[in-house]
Image 1 (cartoon, rainbow, N blue to C red):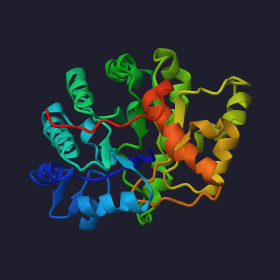
Image 2: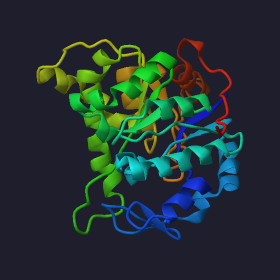
Image 3: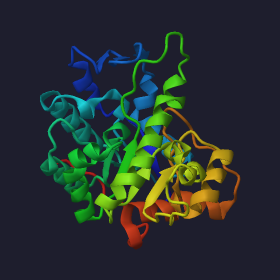
Image 4: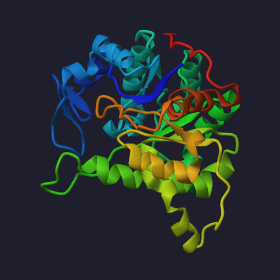
Length: 308
């Protein structure tokens, strides 16, 4: 089974819940309002389920994993605001057609392990958390109960950029993806090295956008007092969204090919042609996602999320 581990698709219940809000994050028709960015005109076609299912097939995938858009800041809202949006997201992804799987999402104001268990029982493959929730020991303490659920159930964690501060005046549209998102992923990668792995020794984790190329800084890590030679963590994966052959090749030289998985980040990016041949493509889209999702069991049939 060929799997794209990283796409965004706002299902109808989530769209309705965002339109019902009067404060950010909210939708006014198809105009998105957040706390930090200017109003953004969402393309309705980006969240058309039939069109996206056709793209999954056109890209050559059997399944695409949908995740909540963490930069919206839903996970950080007060529990009374976050819960209806999270419930709408989970209900919506449960109703998507068979080309889709989903990452669960969780509120961070009040940690609710029961809700996570329910989402996993319904078929979510694991849990996505925003990177800014996992950048220090306090973050790992806050999220610890959720991560313990994942360890106990042998389910993975997906770390994705979270909300970002307002960009500088006059900054181009690409600024958040190239500055605060990369910064967050660097912090999350190094926090996992420093705090996360010791606290959660059996957790499988995947970092979006090649962890912002954080793994390339091993030499600087050693020069500044970190471990001079650190064993590669075989349960810490990175995914490829928005990177092409040069970035992926550089990461493979550090981590090896077995820890890189294919993530397109549709609708915000596309699937590149890495040009490294069929064995490489099979590793990124079949073998490695199988080990991320199921550990030593490898790539078995994904359970479909179902409503509860």
